[in-house]
Amino acid sequence: MAASGAVLTEVRVEVIRILGGRSSSADVATRMAKLIQPHAPLAVRIAVADHLQDSRCEAECVLHVLHYMERLSYGERAWEDVGEDVGITLSEEKERLERQLTSLLLANKGFTLRVLEDIYGLTLNMESPWSSPFPSKFAIQMTSRLKIVDACPILVYIEANAGRYPSEMVSAAATAKRDLKCSDPAV
Image (cartoon, rainbow, N blue to C red; front, side):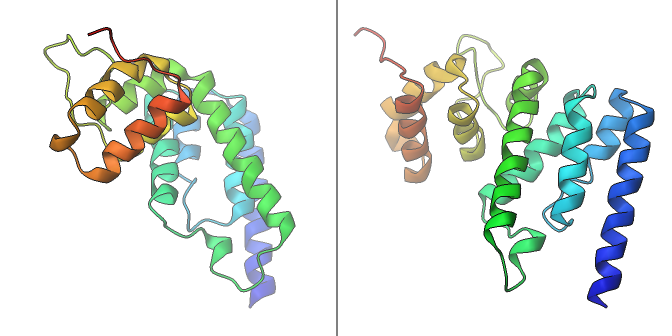
């Protein structure tokens, strides 16, 4: 049974490579990005990430990538973590996947920022009437990971108004603020 699972994974990876090789369009990238799920085999996720590196990953594609990263950030276990033998090779492959996805989000920064604002509540312009002072904890964590210094005003605001926020959000904002070297506005 395990052998047939391995064969199925190899077939899926080959199909991804073939279909991905035919088009780098935003539509194909979005459809491929939907396959990046914790329950999908690592080889499938890596094949998709490889394809996305050379594709037009727009807002919906970025949304799928961020959703995957969010699920992992909240402790959801990946397919390979459920087994008994998670070796160093898998760890290196998972790190490679993480680097590729982070690189993808940075390469598509405009779409990434739009999704972080629209879906995850990250406010980059505190003066906007549409701004929200309540971003998700995941959005705050991503500001640090992606080095989004434009998020400094909301991070400073959260820390200055700590009583309005859950302690884990204040802690995440303080960490991101430190990582991004945000300075408090002059009083």
